[in-house]
Image (tube, rainbow, N blue to C red; front, side, top):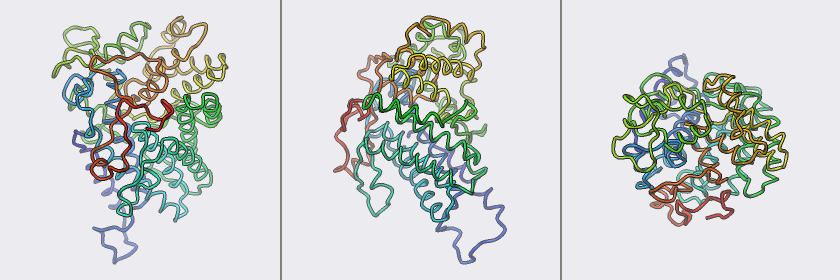
Length: 468
């Protein structure tokens, strides 16, 4: 990651200070405070949540995906290079892999699972397993094969094997099931240290079921009917409304605590709204366009940026995303009711249940538009269009509307859908759009014998059915 992550330094300094300033006694006088042997659950949990949201779901991986799936275009520096495919190498996500994923969120979560299990703190065990599943999902969808079965052992194993994506997906479902079971048996609960749900264990259970549906649905090319049936079964216990959304709520208006999408644009100004995305919304008479994109200063009109064709610092020529869409304190969506309803629509359609699919699809569109402030009258007018709600619903309609709803902070899942379904047509004049991220330099330097022989143009297992 090329930007300096000041957020973590201040966040954890303040968190640790505020927590320990309230402690009046020490359990053991002989404990060296500069070398703690155990980090309390109430510190591990927010650390893992912040690494997960900021590092895995909300920064470099998502920014690159946004450009590649043409929600945005890169107009300067890092994102311009991403758009022109000139920096797609092993340095791309090196720091994400090293510091945010394996020594960050996943190491925190492993320690939390282990020590909370010993303490009988089932709420922390359950939440940690759900978050571990979420991290594995982002990692394997991004890279394909990844280390897990032999990973997180420190110096005991510095050359872990890369597990198949099929086995990682099995682990994801097992972790979610175990997390649900732990939460259902919990007699404890976190409180303010749970930045996502504030210790609401029922909300975590719903989120786990929603994630189960997501990862079942990703296997549509592997087992079309089975994946649909499993997704629908999970959804019976998932979100009831957008009030249940799985959101990271820890951002604030301080310069070092801002939402990473806001922070990156405010500091670097490297994205604009993609011309192809603007054209899609214009073609559908979508009332979200003036919410999603700002007029270019001096012109008063919305102008999308052409992907892979911008010159240095061309951002002033094109529209930025809407100022109300991403603010400094905006929560980061990790799984939403809107996504859940689109999954339901897709799964029902695969099973031939067109009426059920259409009902879920229209609920998803309406809810997505309400969340960004579209009026009920405009929603009704939009949905009444044949181009939006045809006589015969197709996968093209579902994925197109899902893709629009995911602008701008849900680009990673839009990237998954684009690769999985191939129904959004994207072209890049610079060359083929990558269908996975490159493995990081550190793995080639220290674990070369285990790194899969895959390029950014090789599909992952759930995409093409092959394992590297």
